[in-house]
Length: 377
Image (cartoon, rainbow, N blue to C red):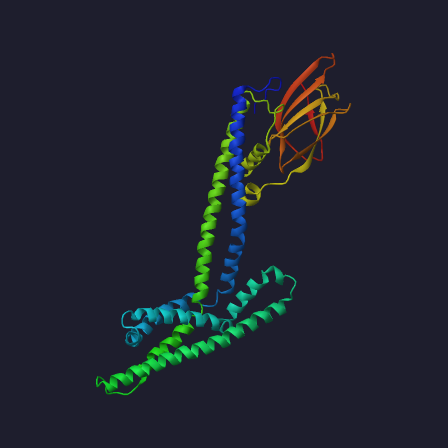
């Protein structure tokens, strides 16, 4: 650290300071965007974690794989029926049946799966209007809603199944009447209905898996956006601190001239950029706190020295104060957490009544209970 205590800042150093301040402002803007993204990211990650925990024993993936296989078989055995109804595009009916099966399965799953009810209970708990409701009331509401959906789902399930059965039987009757078939309606003709039933049962968790996939993709996108903004903030912060250090080397008087809050934050973040708690200690904007520093200044002869102290911290905060006659001083600094004094300028009069100015560098922690004993030359 280079401080020119007695000289005004040079034009070049002021220009470097302006660049440092501008880059630090970009870093703080990126940190703000990262915090905003994290506020979206955090509840989604919690939801995904809870969903996975609740649904871990529900065999979601095996059910869904079975659903896909059954859909293929169902279309294979029902395609002639679909051609009778819509010759130009029988696959449209097949897709429609799949979609209807998923809807019916979602209506039924609340009563058929306790895992799904537990998931819905978790989601209901997160609604702010339910914060003061007893858990028993919320569970009762979830069960009531699931029961209502189940009744409607059963009605729809029977209606669609009856329609498939009707069209299967009609097709057999037409084939017999046309003389292209001799056997009556049999077990093989009931297969479309059977596969439809299996399709609904196997599709109980398809809608959940779809919702989870959408949420996971959204979460992944937000996580990438968050990481990107953190990296932008880190790069700008490092660059800003380098420009400021260069400004000091070129003669910027840190103690006499202004230091913006952008730069204060920049040096704070630069210190915490490699911490494990990246969001808490790096991206978050910390609150300033009143911190104290206690010290006693004595000469090499062991005598107390009354001094005037100009102090500069690691985050570029500054403070001045004169000690008492016993050389004891207590500074108060409104700074960010974990700041420390890096440099003093000590002014005092020696035994010959000559004015002496000393620069002292080091690492002096704040909020020290035991005063530092600083020996003057």
